[in-house]
Image (cartoon, rainbow, N blue to C red; front, side, top):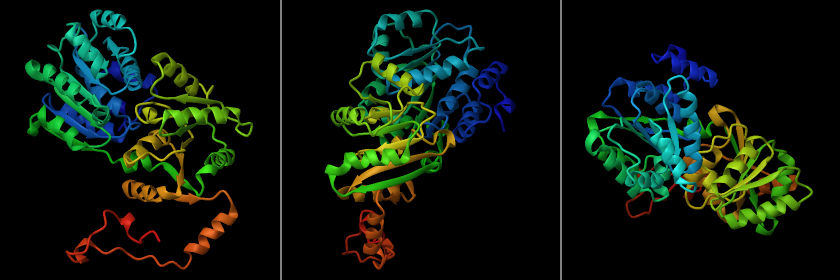
Length: 421
């Protein structure tokens, strides 16, 4: 079924056609009919960035808002400025013929222009929590006509410490008018579910689960190189870049300090035929926007990034993701990183550099994504050496938990058994 067959206004169909969008994604197919089903339905949806979730809530909102009412009718909360701008652009394009006014609201820039835009008759506000609270306390924002409240990337907002702000906004928005809550999250942590249940009646709450395995990981080819000596890591990485010859890539590092060091070395290295740039948390909003604009226009072909870029950025042309550093501790960050490629089911390639003591992390990731990450080698002799070590090593099937005596400790995961040799 295509969007032209949906029972939505012709103005929205026309906008979607101009956006080049004809067929709904899985999350759109599941969420949009549920939102239309009843004006009391609340949605709690698990879906990754890059699966089309913005249109999953934007289309029903734009369909049901009143263009003649020049007050705020929908609030979309997002964790970062980058995602705020991305969601704003979707609403701007989608409301082109519905004559609804959207505004983007985030910190780090002058608040005065945002106040002017809201007072000019904004009906849809896309905002980061802190700046929205600031505007609410100034009495610039009123929730008395709000029909929809969206939490986009809810888990990311909690990771960033926004839970008190989100709770405050939801309480203030819902205490008198009871708008509908549309919650979208990559992972359904207990705290995320608690928010949904706290601000909706359970009988009106619909849960939607679009598997991260199929949508984010499935189309991405995943590999790793084992780095025996950390002192050789940089030169090994340069060799990998030469071998892969990426058209456009993101290189993830864990700290901005090492990112700056890597940026400098790559720029000075004559072996690297890429245009290098960096994105990290301390950059001003203007610097971030310039960097992302240059990356989208391919003036930058290799973007070094900390995890601030792991979510919420719509970058459709990335061919390669390199994990120069594996994410520390949280395997879900790996999924968010490689989600920058294989966008909307287009194939991509993710390559990780893994130091010997990090091999257990690779096994944890394989279990999480339910997919083998294939090992690659820079030298033929390394491959042969690895084969000779593992050729005659038996692989034992791990016992089921029911087969293990109560006094024997059961391993935390399959990665702790001999399954991998």
